[in-house]
Length: 100
Image (cartoon, rainbow, N blue to C red):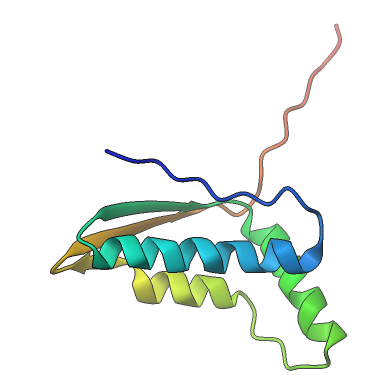
């Protein structure tokens, strides 16, 4: 692997959290079209689902759950000039510490 590129959301603002995965996917598709083999790890689908639902409800639009998942499935695969592999994680794991 030559390059590692990370996308993260430092803001808790709903719109930023919603658009970050689409930006990452667009960049991954660009790299794929340039002949690069890309691995895209998408963390915390449940959190994205809640943010997406909030946005759609706020603007009174019909809710199509997990549009990003549909886009990920459509883009994943081997192509003439590269490939895109996706790993989707449902929940972000939280560390739990126990005092003894």
